[in-house]
Length: 89
Image 1: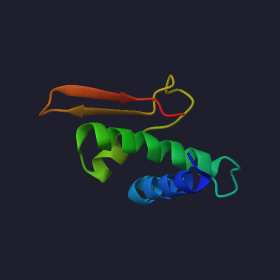
Image 2: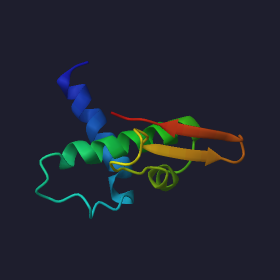
Image 3: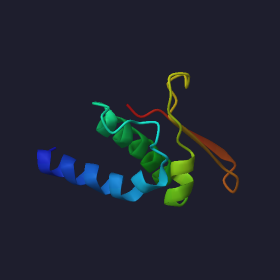
Image 4: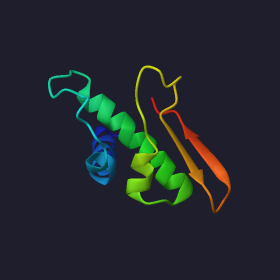
């Protein structure tokens, strides 16, 4: 995949989800800030595509931290009676 396509995808998923996250715990000076935000956006995108939920619902399904056992998101779709679990690295 071309570098241009990757940048376009990166930009699109950030536009879709970044404003729905509370990013106060990620310092502006954190050298991994961009990667951390993109990882959250990718997890939200996976939930969104799998379930058809709203952008906000997908973003709310995401969590991040050292004690998450490698999981980045979980969403329960009550209509479909399914749980979606995401690991996005």
